[in-house]
Length: 118
Image 1 (cartoon, rainbow, N blue to C red):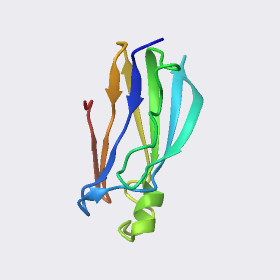
Image 2: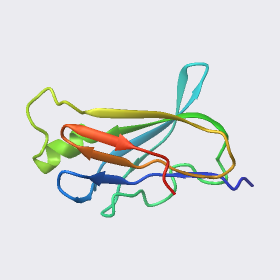
Image 3: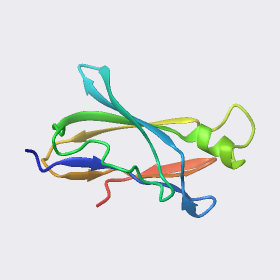
Image 4: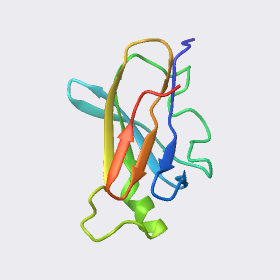
């Protein structure tokens, strides 16, 4: 079994709290084709209840996390006028090591940031 796995954490930087209820889709990218792996939703801590990609399913390669940030911002009343500045937020990244990858999203109505966390 692999030792690698993938997790995320979504934080609402405008409100200073975890972003609960954000729908997240994970895709594996092969030859520029997206293959959907799963859909999850963040809990009260802004995390998913299980790893997005567990050790049994982990494989090195190119992936994309797609965060439905606009739906979250609308639900919290902080979205701003339509069309939203940030709505669907894709993050494409590579996993080249058999390791834990943590890809958080920090979101506000007019800005976002990500990094490889721990």
